[in-house]
Amino acid sequence: MKLCIFVGTTVGGLAGGMVAGALDLDTFSLGGFALSGVGSIVGVYAGWKVARKLEE
Image 1 (cartoon, rainbow, N blue to C red):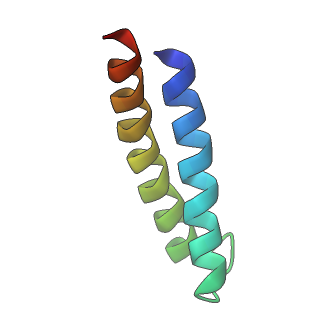
Image 2 (image 1 turned 90 degrees about the vertical axis):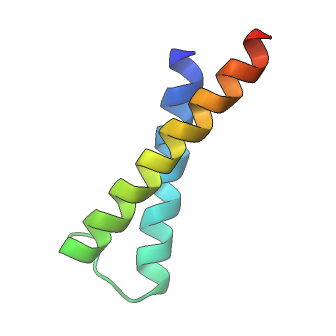
C-alpha cells in the first residue's frame, strides 16, 4: 500500500507541476506550489484506491 501511495504522490505532484507549467505559472510560485500539492493529494487518493483494489 505504501508503494502505491508513494507512486501516486510522485505522479500526481509531477502532473500538477506540469499543469502549472502549461498555465505559465512559475515552478516556485504560489500557484505552481498549490497545483503540485493538489496533484499530490489526488495521487495519494488514487494510490490508496489502487492498493485497496490489489488487496481484494
